[in-house]
Image (cartoon, rainbow, N blue to C red; front, side):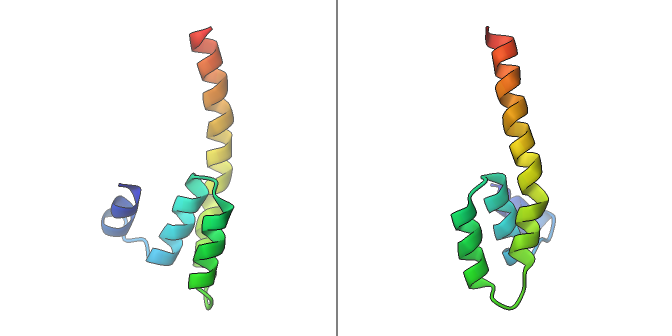
Length: 71
């Protein structure tokens, strides 16, 4: 769903979108695959670096909120 929204609604190119989706899932092997597919440009790494810190922060925040609400 995120891929379709990014591609058609936000008009993000495929290489950047692959980096964004791998960063959102915090999946470095997917970034490596995207880097192999896109040898001339670093768009996938830029997309990954844009989303990865936010994703890690939200993981920690979600864990804390779950503990707060369910215990």
